[in-house]
Length: 317
Image (cartoon, rainbow, N blue to C red; front, side, top):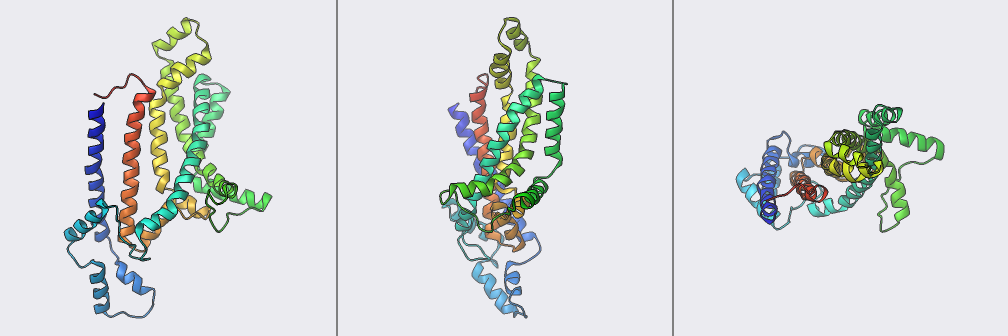
């Protein structure tokens, strides 16, 4: 087990290195120049020598391998440099928005799990009844409707009935927990509905598959209570694919809620990434992509470790 864990941790290094190389090269191959974009906002024509001087100060006129080597040496020390657009440290730009995105992802995950697991099990244990059909329709609705569209409908209803609109300023949890939850609960519901729909369908199919196993029939033949059969035997042995889906959706939520954040006026990591791409902010884009890749890699590793907890038959040796 220890050898497997160390091996998986070491495999993260080439994965993240590959992501860093690909992001670094692609950002310098796409059309557009950060220096020209910065001077375009001031209006008028800018002499070419001024642009060349600015590129030299930013180190953009150096060979790409040399730029990458310098950047990676700084990344190893957890120094991602400064934003080329705002001239603020990249870590400061990320830190301001990371708490918001992380809190929204956690809230959406809690709501999704609270809905998905009970309803998925209920649909599986009442297969082909009206309960199953109702839950399946509910889940299909979550898959069919984008979360940002649900958010727009929610805002229209809240605005019409309660005269509520998304606040212009974000309130941190430690400043005012009530105001913070009142602001984030609606986007969490909008995002968590689709999240729950995916996990709900996976829970139903997994539990249905396990309910057909021989050991389930044996437990029932021994007179074990149906509730105990479902909870102790069926649900526990069907959690592996459910945990995988939930974890990957959580990783996606960290930086993949661009439109939803825009609808609810939330300045999270997704919106920051879009702004960085629009401004050709190389250093900020590289840091955000590497951060999101690290989140996916770490969550995949965590899920592999959780497999042993949820299923004692899984052993890493």
